[in-house]
Length: 247
Length: 242
Image 1 (cartoon, rainbow over the protein chains, first blue to last red):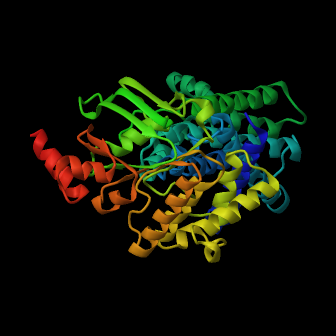
Image 2 (image 1 turned 180 degrees about the vertical axis):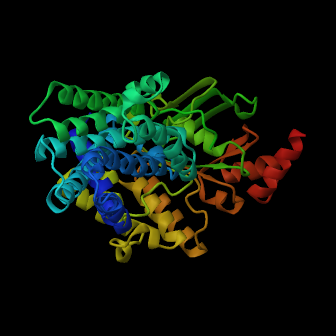
Image 3 (image 1 turned 180 degrees about the horizontal axis):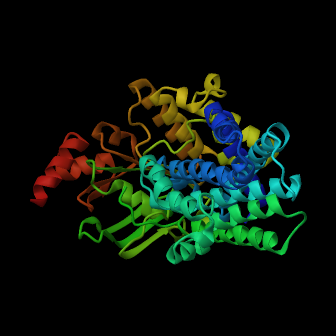
């Protein structure tokens, strides 16, 4: 592994996004806009204050999943990965380069979304600003890692987009956003227990209703990190120096 | 005695469908020369190059490149590879692309800048250096891809169809460049399906259906087959096979 090559890869990914203002708008503007829209959907009720922090655990993950899976797929389909794999670069440099670049973006995204939620929409979270930010960044990190992993199973960008309903929506349905998990059928509770998004949402619930760093919050953060690291590891296994593909 | 850059023995690639992409290929390719893998589309040229750069798994035989098994870690950086598709980032500028790949080859700081300036000049893209690759013409994009392969100090260049889609003047310029590089001791392996271009090579490997039909210089090939051109030789060899 070479930190220089990892950082060079991160810089390159960020430079690509710098040339792509539409994606930057998607990343930075859409989450706070959607959260603001929900504020007015649930006006005059207490629902918004309850779900807004949870959305901060969901939106970064979903958006980073989408952007990362397509960006990595492009590396595979346009031949740049083919060329890189014949160069003296480690697979870890490549994967970590992506993870670092998108985590940096996630940090900015989390700052903006949390800033709007806490500062403009005046949502109260007992846990404070720092845990809220960390929760949002970890959610985005998880999305990046899962996006890197699943990109190996898509042959086209069209297929990569199909992973959203197949891979993300089930997690969204059972994560506790719509109905408390203990009120769902047992099978769905088991599914929720193994889905990583559940822990990201759970962490946000903890931050909303508890002051300080609770044991459950720390466990939730640890599980999200563990899933992200496992996805990055599995993602690195899907990048092979030698392949069977007929070119 | 002439040094050997690439050696294959009974090299085979058979896909699970039973299709033989390469069928017992035996070759010894000389150093410091331009060798052309010539054959129709689907002949196995790209598969052979992918085996030699270590990207394609094999089902039999061996491939040795610069004295090491093909795909060895120590060959990365000593060999460069221009793939058939562009293999550059269309949303980065020419200079950004080249700087990134130069860093991946291990170059740092001032060496990156010098290497980028040198190759941009070599492929005649100085005015386009700060343009986004996606906005360039097809031929210019092709030259960016070639420029990446010229970065660093590779001894062996694998160029998969480097002149496809280029205008005749540019093609001649690139062949002149390949000749200069070979003159500096670099070994160049190019693929092509245009027989006219075969005359630019020192050494030809005619490939069809995963098999080597002939391996000789253009002059020797024509003499052996009593032909006036490489294309005529190729046709005679294919008919002889039947």
